[in-house]
Amino acid sequence: MKDIVLDEEISKIRQYIEDRLKQGFLINTKMVDKQIKRVQQNMMRYFKQIHSHLLAGASLAYVGQSSFCSSKNEYYFNYGSYMIPHPDKVAKGGEDALFTHRNLISVADGVGGWADYGVDPGLYSKELCLRIKEIYLKDTQIDSKQLIIQAAKATKATGSSTVCVMKIGQTIDASFVGDSGYAIYRKKENEYELLFKSEEQQRSFNFPLQIGSEGDSPTVAKQEKHDVLSVQKIVYCFQGDLIVLGTDGLFDNIQAKQILIIINDHIKSSGLNPQALSQSIAEYAYRLSLDKNYNSPFAQNAYKHRLHFKGGKSDDITVVVAELDI
Image (cartoon, rainbow, N blue to C red; front, side, top):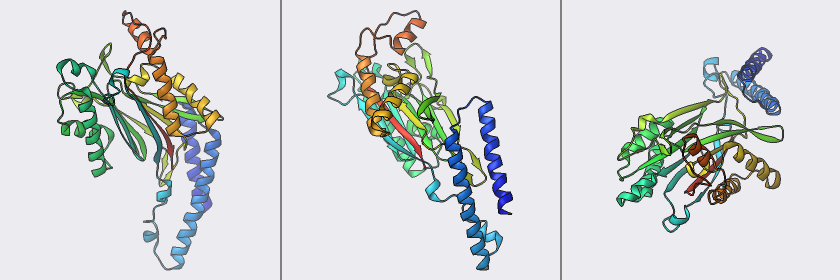
């Protein structure tokens, strides 16, 4: 019986992988084999557990209540973060904010235009992240979009902000407003490859959607869910996927593919350390933001809108690097 059940579970995993390949997704075959071996080991342990329960006189109904996946197989983020304020805003620590947790990462960027009205743009973004923290710790099951909606409702500071929130559970659940966003990278053989990049929400050039005391409804938050394969009670994923979360100070100065080069170079020379990697990415973006001759993503976007802009875009830069682990 156990061989039949095991074959069925592995067959479902293989079918899922084939379907993902047909859709153009990258698959790390070595990791697939590793995860299938893990399934085999877990199945053997599971049947031994059933056998011992039955010998002790327990019913199959009781045995079925046992969770196949132990807490050791729950997903979490192994993360690091780094912030570099705009050169003119170092004294006050910039206007970006973040909240990080083993199961949730988030960044927010206070909209600088509020300074023209005598309002510190950093007050709103910092309170927003504080509310995200408070609400999430009270209800860790809340989804990312509802978390943004409730946090915006609870934030009382004057101002507005872009925001990006990502949590990990049975799926990677991300929501964002404006031009704060994220990219996902997956290791294939000895190097990482870009798997996904979020698309920023802009009302017009350099005018992102934003939530706050004045701005867009938080219901405009775009939600993305990246599936983690689940076959009945067997959780199957790609351990080692990397997520880079950032404010526009990052993505206005370096593209997701440039970040990929930094990731691969850094890991080859120093190994994977999310804290050190987040610093390397932020510092590289900062150097380019000060280069007046650099053809930045922001400059390229300006050209598409028939506007002249040359060089990097000086701004607060916030980077979170998170490795998916179990």
